[in-house]
Length: 330
Image (cartoon, rainbow, N blue to C red; front, top):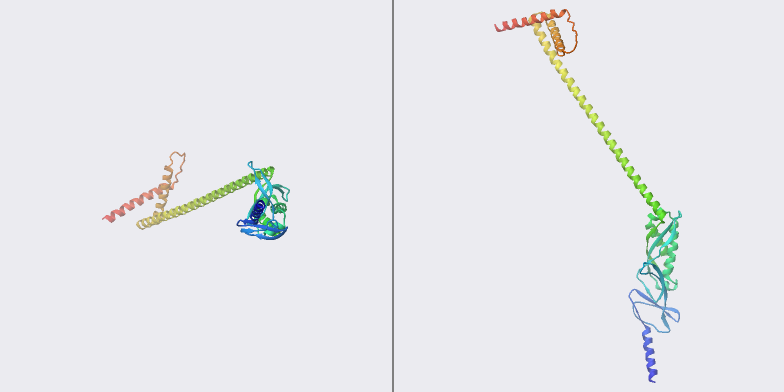
């Protein structure tokens, strides 16, 4: 009886240990009784009936990376479902744009299990199903866009993918929070063509800026020359006006002085022709002075006959002034 009792005791201990399940925080365990869903174990210490009840095993696909950087998938079975947000890194895949350009895209998916029962019983391998759904959805979304739109519309693509995947995975008890495109790699020849186009665009912009700078410089130079010419013309105009005004004033002064002199000569001599002869004589003297200033010029000067009479009149006027002055002194 002793060995039997020991065996029974060992069996009871093993069954007791098998019946105690400790569930960690943010994890749940699905329990089946005789093959049917019975209940969901929450975090903490839980007790089940061994043999009659057991935790449901689920398949879970994960991405691994070896020491050489190569990525590969493995499928393992586990009994615990993580309720935290999970990051799923999809392998690179080829997609074709609307203008028939093949792109290599690497995507990240952030999802969270909200209903563990649906995640276990509505789909066989949840991560694998999400991956395949994401790949097909990504092909459809990219297929509606051109290459330029794909490269410039990452936020739009991410939003479309998230909405479509969140709606599709709701049946599986999953909430898709974010979808991010890590890399979008066009083929080598497309990248080279894009680089050439970018260089051509930069050269074009540089030439346009240089032409605009030359244009503005020429305009400013022309405006400066125009303003300078205007100012010079205004200066010359004002100088000519001032010179003309000065000359006119000088002539008026000379004319006034000559008029006073003629009036005095007229008053002293009592003969109007004497004053006239005086004025003519002064003109002759001024003309002779101009001729004398250029002695090197070969000029033949003809003296009119009336000059002698005019000069004699001028001498008479001089004597007249002398006699008048003597009378004033006496």
